[in-house]
Length: 560
Image 1: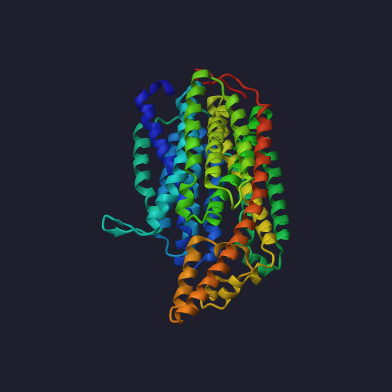
Image 2: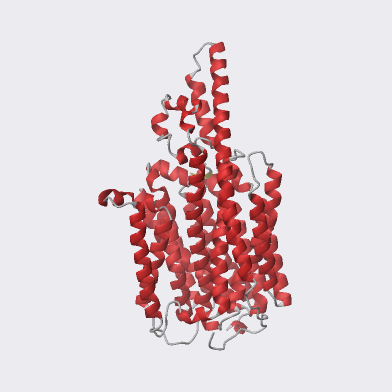
């Protein structure tokens, strides 16, 4: 298969694959800066979580199924479908007339995202022998890093309203911008990419796919914004959150049990259980899940730390992650080149997991009194740890299996990493919220909040007892709006009275801000400790991985 392509042909395919993958990676970060404007326009603050979860849900469900289908029908065909679905989903998201349409469009877009994610990493295995895959996996890892910087910046720029070809941009352009890039990627893949499939008998395991989808969808819904999404159902039935999750647990257990029973009996299972007899496969899936949870546990909340403690805007907080992105890109590209030369990968997994664990542990020392320089230095080395590990997991698992199985085994890494991230976010989010609530006990008696309760804007702010509201009141944009409102309200007062009132207001605001930032920082320490423990567990598992030297030839042998 690979020998029929010239180097130029392979390069064009990889550029188009990276372009499509860049779309998916970019979408995950670009929408974050637009969410505020979206829920404001639709007046749908209660649907905020569903806009995110709908995409995550369909992506997670699609990845393992798309991986198997690509083994049956070819990477090119599936990738073309994925890019087309993603582009159409992006267009529909941008054209959404209400929040319900947006949620459904995001879910459709997520199907395309899952197909692209499942196939992009696998195509490297089709085009290049194991020894050469490192450099390309490294470049794809760098693509993810680059998107995490470009996304917030581009999203903020478009959402703020710019003039482009005589048109004024808004949040809808964060979706529209995907369409032309997708069209270019689609054209390149359609023209240059070979089919990349294997001559095997096609029997699709529809029931297995359905059972796996039910299990994965329920897992995501059970841990990601469960209370927000099912609030109406809980109110109507009187069911508690604990009771709802018990029911979901039963559904997960039943569907997984049926799935395992079925997969041992069908001819072409969606996720062959024989893979789990391979020790390295089990270890790498476990490392991917643990690392995924620890990775997001540290990255996601670093941006919140920068906003709450350093007073950074959403765009500025994205820029403050540049040191980590730089470290990630340097390590991913550099390690990929070295792996391709020496043919060994385990040492990079070991160094990467240990380095990332130590750096996340050092983040526990972040306080409101810390300098950004300390955070930046830690982030550089944290990024390097992440850059060493992320691409290598795909290389390691692909090296264990013959060519015909690459779609399923490669997409399994993405699946377990995604599940780890989703569950980790839910757990760390609960830990953070509970810690902040404890740290802010009695905060509603603060003079600052008492002043806000008496202001005309109090009805728009909502409940002052809500932890999320208390954190929102401390963000730079909201603080500025409150300050501007106070200035307008006291504008006609006599100068001495106004000066005294302003002085008191600023003092109360500063004291409130200090209590919130310290409560946030103290609670975040628990999150970083948990993330460090998970990454430490991943580092321990790497010890047991049995390394097989990377071959110069593509492996077509059968078996596991």
